[in-house]
Length: 248
Ligand code: PGA
Image 1 (tube, rainbow, N blue to C red):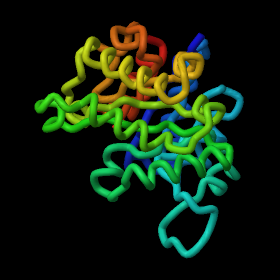
Image 2: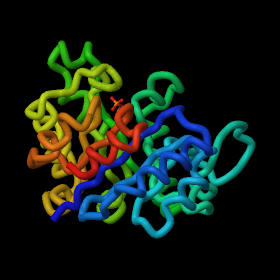
Image 3: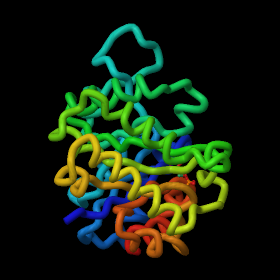
C-alpha cells in the first residue's frame, strides 16, 4: 500500500516570521490522517518550521543541498547540516534549479546519493518543457532524466526516494496537466523504475504530480491510480488552500 504524500514547495517565499504564522494557522485546522504532509521552505525558515511542527507529524523539507559534507563552497548548505536541525526531506533537481542554476542530471545524481547517505529523504523532480511535449518527446526525456538520476542507487535506497513528475509547462502557469496526462506520465515513470528495479520496488515507490495543483483539482488528480501525491507550489503558500489540498 502506497501512502499518499503531499508536499508544499514555498520556493523563495516567506520570512521566518511569516513561516511561523503559517504553521500556527495551519495547525489549527490540520487533521492528521493517513496522508503524509511536508513543507519545503527556504533555508532560513527550516528551524522555525521544525519547531512549529514538532509533534504534528508534518515534515520539513529543504529545497536544495550540496553533494559534499563541507568545504569551500560559498553559499551552499550540506545534507548533514539540514539533518542536524531536524529536516526530514530535500527536494532535488527541481526544474527551476535545473533551469536557473545549471543543475544537471549528473549533479542531481550526486545530490541524491549524498542525501541518502546522510539520512535525508529526497524528493526528486523530473519533467519536460513545452517544446519537448509539443514534439512528442516527453516520455523519452523523462525516462532519460529518471535513469540518470537513479544511476548507481541500490533498490533499498531507491525506495526512500519520492519522485515528483512536474511538466515545466504546468508549473506556475495555471495550466494543470489533465488528470489523464498526469496519470499517463506517472505510470510511465513507474514503468521506467520497474525496468531498473523490478516491479516489487516500483510498485512501492511514491510518485507525485506537480504543476498548478490547487484545491479545485487535487482530488481528481490524487484519485488516479499511479499518482500518489502532489508537489504544490503557489497553492501551498496560503494555509487555507494547502489544508484543502491535504484534506482532499
Ligand atoms: P506550482 O509549482 O504548483 O506553483 O505550479 C509546483 C512546483 O514547482 O513544485
